[in-house]
Amino acid sequence: MKSFPKSLHQKLLQREQNNALRQLALHNQLVDFSSNDYLGFAKSEVIFQQTHEFLISRDQKTNGATGSRLLSGNHSIYTETEEYIAQFHQAEAALIFNSGYDANVGFFSSVPQRNDIILYDELSHASIRDGIQMSLAKSFKFKHNDLVDLENLLTKFQPATRNPQPATIFIITESVFSMDGDSPDLEKLAALSEKHNAYLVIDEAHALGVFGINGEGLVQELNLYDKVFARIITFGKALGCHGAAILGSEQLKNYLVNFARSFIYTTGLSPHSVATIFVAYQHLSKSQQEREKLFQNIAYFESCLPTSISHLPSKSAIHSVIISGNERVKSIAEQLQQNGFDVKPILSPTVPEGQERLRFCLHSYNSQKEIFTVLDLLSTFVF
Image (cartoon, rainbow, N blue to C red):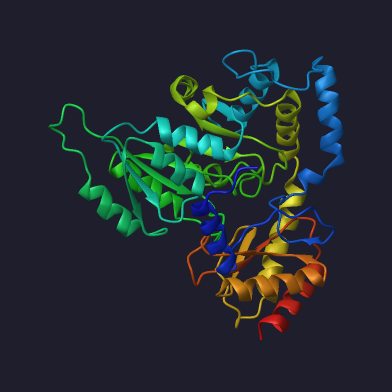
């Protein structure tokens, strides 16, 4: 076997020396405080069985899509599911991608054009940043959830009206941030985008299923869907399955089908994967009880967390306890795991150095006893 390149070996060695080397772990039987399965849909035998029944009712017994959606992979369940999703989210159209990463890379690499301006929150997800890097547009980050900083940039880059082809400005943020669990002021953000004639794009990955009367997300909960140019929603969190969709106008959907390379040049999702999305959405409309239990657990978690522990404020299912240093946060996570609780450490460089943390993901199926016990143990290990 050919020797491994020295430059790559050095990068791995550096990660190991920084106690930041990532490794794959098998599924465990610990109490779940780490997964994004906020409502328990991924574990639902009912959704599993109804997906099978749905496929049989549509006479779909194919294991794979067999090709890209523009060639042989656009089976009828795609159409049915996209129409349902668009109606559920009060959008003109929905286009399903293979993952949230594919959706963000596809959108940001193709929609903003050369000389356009992208203004993005500095804590935007890696998939957003990767898509922006592939874009021909100019990009600038604004301070996290800082609308004053954003407006300063909007004023600075406001296109001249005398320009026959003025640049389009895109504002990019998330409705719930994956590491901090916090949210921007979306109402003020929407007003700001209207004031400056900018196009607002919101990633709703961690809001779908959690916020809204039927789990539609924060944009619909705040009745802002007609003020947003595009929403990216992913199904690997509260929906408990796989894939993603971009919500927007029919024109946007048509554009993405023609120009989003992560959509065009990949095999489509299997009929089973898309059917699972459809069935999960039907359950989402009836999951008020699960959401109520989730928010009860969120409130209980906050009430039990000692004030002496550094904790980022959050109203979502994601709660981060700051424990600086890769070695220390990994050690405390391992102690919690040894006591039966699956809590994961988030290390630098995933988060900035000094902001290493334990990321607690709360679920509708966590008990108050489990929450109290894990926080009681955390207090013991931290102090």
